[in-house]
Image 1 (tube, rainbow, N blue to C red):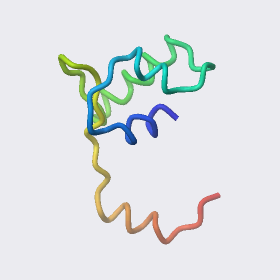
Image 2 (image 1 turned 30 degrees about the vertical axis):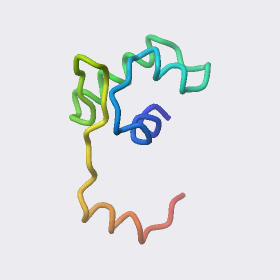
Image 3 (image 1 turned 180 degrees about the horizontal axis):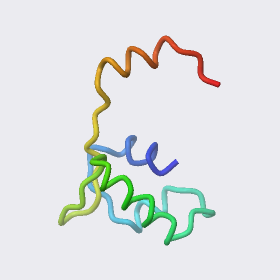
Image 4 (image 1 turned 120 degrees about the vertical axis):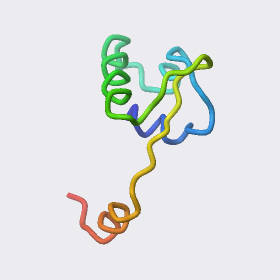
Length: 72
């Protein structure tokens, strides 16, 4: 949910408050911070002076592999 939201808005840095506004109300602030910490450690987002931005690009061979699979 958080990951998808950040992917859709990857072209601009966002503050945590802006991210919270775009997510369903059931996402608690502490949970969001924990998710963002995980995404940062895994190299999918960066923290900059203007906010948080999605930077991860999935490798082509994984995209091709996932395209031909059945999602359960």
